[in-house]
Length: 457
Image 1 (cartoon, rainbow, N blue to C red):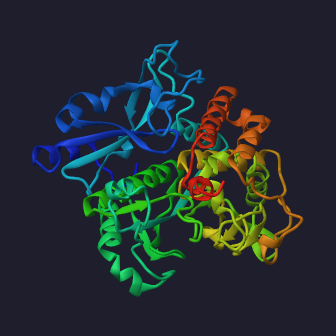
Image 2: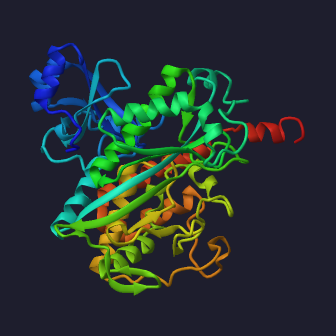
Image 3: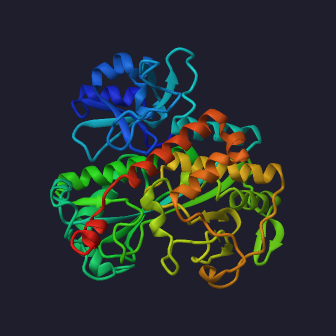
């Protein structure tokens, strides 16, 4: 539980005082979107807090348009699309200060018949890996760095324009610029304050290397709490944008000629004595432990076969371009932003930063892949290659990241390690999910095609 979350007693007091009258009961779907219900706060206290509520199980099989997709075994027409159970995790109950008189709580999904976790639910997957780490005596600490673009049109205006001629909130590259950022402080300041007052401690925001692009960093914490904070951050960012009649996007690549938006993952393992990554062994200038070395080796070794969990849609792969700040190789290095894995910090702050995911990743899935891979590295003592020195974009002898969703999904679907880590049913479910996304893209007619072929073909 975050120390800044609400207890049921505190919620009851705020309901009685008229400060809260609504509780959003939510969970993250396969895309990482928050779905759920808004409950009357008194009803939540009387019934939902203890007993939970229900939702249609088709929600773990729908596409982006909320259409049920055939081919899933977890839920389908033949099984009648029944319910699953939304059980609030009361440790996540907090006031959503960016909304009017509203609290929000995240839920685990349980099967209505067996009362076991819905295996394919993203939060279930991450919980399983966290339990695996706990069995070994480890607690994972993590942080997400998220980038996004702020645009001056509202979401409705952007949609009605066909997403053409969108106006960025800045008109020159603003990486670390405080002057340009001042023009946008009405939005970014509101986001920082809303998160901080909702139990999501913020470190900073800053301009990024794109027109109207920004980055926000929230403080590290235990892994599940970080994934929960991550999805709430995105929800708050969008809902504040709606209120201000602007828009933000977490697409991995908004425009061909602009920087992609990343989600850098920072991860370390801890036990009762502290961070287990520091040690008395030297890897170059890194004083580290066996656990650090093997965790890094496992994370790198399994990155390609887990790529759809880091880069889940067609647009994700358009971010991976040489000289783009997005990695194209599975190299690791000490404080080198051209590598897919960057080692940062010293002593208690020693950690691994994975620069592969885009801002479009589902954090529950991305952290599931990271933790499962790293723990396997420890279990099998997987040694990383030597640290890369120089420009990793030019590395000829280092494995590349998969560069399209088809290749990534094929590797994922054929991986014996993914099957071992997640289970065959989960592997099949997500293989179908990513393949369905690719099929939807193959059938789409794009503006690029109309511009290229309408007259001249």
